[in-house]
Length: 360
Image 1 (cartoon, rainbow, N blue to C red):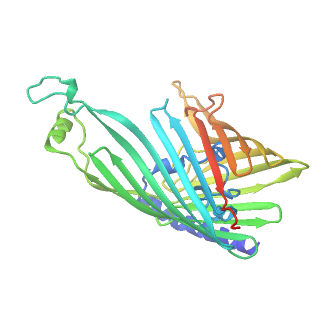
Image 2: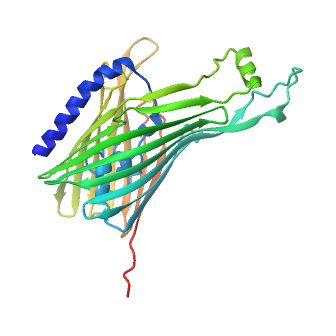
Image 3: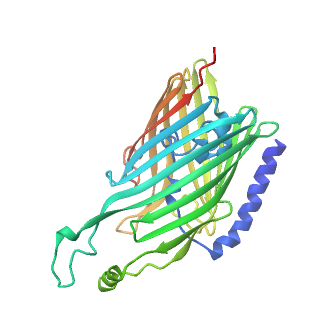
């Protein structure tokens, strides 16, 4: 338990130091990296920081990739948001280096494609020509390299190095780099996890590429001309605790996670400056380690109606999973019952273990 106390102490010290930093730099940035990956996690309202033990740990908690048992593990996910306008894709692969360490690579893309570019719709003589309409994509990419190592007495640690690339057609693009640090700790029947995203603060450097014609159109239509700038992503700390209960062939896994954001007040259950708290809860019921039913509650927000009355909304999620010998197939339905302002989405994910055939 001393290792867990030490880890918790480091987190508390870090949060205190981040408080003063958030007063100087408050910035929403790289929010596509807060959506989550794998239908298993989304079905549990992203409450998996302490229990992830496969290649998806490269996103949720890099210490979790030590649970990879095969020669190579591959995972993929596809989801669509806003009635299919936005596409969200994820792929990852990972493997053990030796009995005490593992490595993984994850790739994430969130993008809107085929956006009409009407800046050239009207020519210099004022004529409308629809043939002058072109299309472009606005997409965000993340490339995450993960490394994990086993320590003593149930403690595992992990680290991520990630590169972020974002672009809006040919108009603007940005590169960023950040570091995540994480740990898991097992004590008796309990699992604890901590994930510190963007622990060093992630910097995205934006550069614009607008020609004179596009700038003129922006000015005539009253739009602000974008400038080169630096966008900051402040640290986010996620704490998790869980315990597995077994009853013959059945298993029950409840997990509670708490997100601590450091970029000022957010619309969360506990909203404060500079740190806001966003708790979310997930539950997984399993049978014979082959079939799983999942549920979760998250995204708790305060909503005001036209009369000024306020109420709290939440986002309930649901999911199911099948585990074959080397294949895991999972499905999640977010915002069941339409209890929050978020739109529901259907999410599918697949995980596959590759095992080398023994030589004769």
